[in-house]
Length: 425
Image 1 (cartoon, helix red, strand yellow):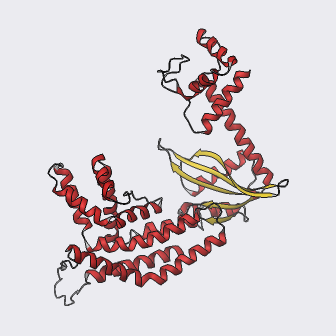
Image 2 (cartoon, rainbow, N blue to C red; image 1 turned 45 degrees about the vertical axis):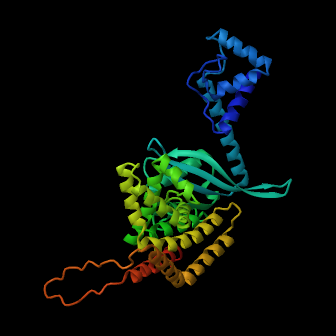
Image 3 (cartoon, rainbow, N blue to C red; image 1 turned 90 degrees about the vertical axis):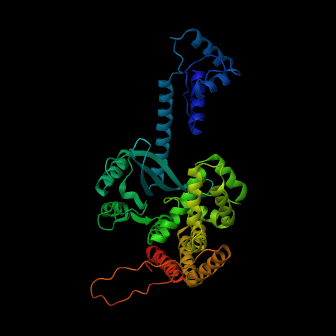
């Protein structure tokens, strides 16, 4: 039985490190050229220093039909026993704490199945050491067939029932800001609240701030075009190792892809282009004229160069670099595990006041800086306005806005929209 404990410890080590157990060939051969997987490799390594395990492996190799307790079925059984024990210990701690909060979120996996993650937050009080710790216990995934509030409510209640956790002891609900979760009439939080009025809903301030940025970036076509260009820059250089290497040689920061779920990724993407704009333009110019490059590469470089060397792009680059930097700083603070409600509220209020204060100056400074660059690079600021065809007997004349006035209007409206979405301003 001693080698069973060693098998268990090897499996426990591998799964705790999130390492796969099996390899291409499940072989006990000592041939080092055979990839027998992490589990058998670790077993062989331990056997070099343990005579009992060494004799067991020799016997298993000489008698293939003998019981070795090394088969994939045994490995899976050990993993299941370990998982069951951990799950049971976590539930014991939750029941001991009595009061708890529930956190659930769903996401599709690689098999296109919707998986609902279940987390319980509770307070762990150690009376001996006189320490109080807020802990979060991940209880696993549950596959969901539908994402409506009624179906999610059923999954949550059944999960709590199967874990023998009373809903009456629930004191908080924490979800993202999707309407099916946060709806005040028929959302999941309202359904749980109807069953237990002490289960208060706490929304995700970080997710709310992220959604404010995501939606504000879709309010005007010129902003959508801006972020499309930022993403195209990353795609163009990341598709080729040669192009990526050339870009890294000249730019101080590496360009990054944008992301809707991780708003700080946009901050990193914009910052890289902002700090290395001149180097980026020079690199695109060289690539568009380099005859050693393929025709497709030269064409793509020329199109990107044309998109970058526009007054709107340069202005918005200045604008978003400042705005995203301030939002990213607050988002990183909100992700701090030591953050509390008071500090979070203070940080969000400070961000609001800062956006109000810089609204006019930021737009004017972005335009001023962009005009200086456009003048230096010979970029035309005013574009020819396409006149709308008049209807019969129409007398009104649409004077339109100049490019400078139009982009200023866009920037100010973006700040207003962000504050309205986040703060109901």
